[in-house]
Length: 296
Image (cartoon, rainbow, N blue to C red; front, side, top):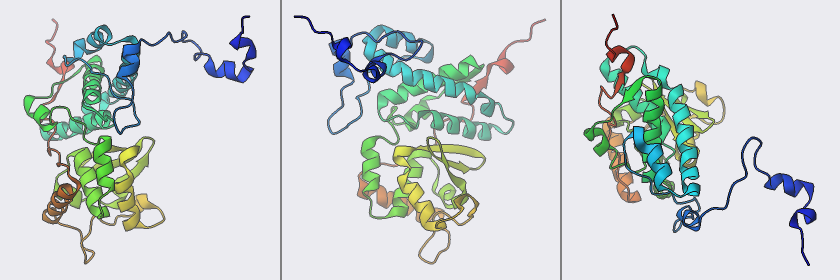
């Protein structure tokens, strides 16, 4: 005797199972793709698929060809989101200023677009999407070999293991300083210049503004820095508080040397390394509109 699951389901259950409007129903996932996105050991998030290490013009096509459909859909959702956000950042990279300031802006934009990555494959995916999104707006982002080494071979700056280790530090100031160093590449003297009002809440975590550029901390890693701000500013209008974010025992702002020592010792206790302070060279972004030859 046959049995109809559809007849037995309630209207609410049928609505929950229906695909979003305008999208075709999802087909069955190949078993290899299902295995590819199962959580890894000790991690509740899906393991990121092994994406091809090719240049940005070829990346999406190569991923579509090499990955199973479900794995590609997982990667492509992240790729398309980063691509769209990169295009929206193009105006920031066309601002006026010195070559060094242009390099700072490029590093900050790239940091915002890749900081959510929790695996090497996701870093690469977001990096290629950022390059493609900027290229569509007439900007060529060309990270050099030096910058690639600074990225430590595309390793994520704040993966789940690193965030867990930072949360375990007994010194809240050290946890906040190392989180900022890992996330932004700021030097100790830049950390010492931060005020509580330089840190603000955003939709996707925390925003940190320094030297005219804005960096971002993802929500999963923002806890130590948010705690440091609340500890210094107390309850109230944090955005208006100009108190130094990092102070010594006497209440004076910590010097670059003190913060370097704090971060180094904290990193050793946490069992992590500090990131390279420089992500991109000064001439990492080329405006193709300026480089195009004039047409007579």
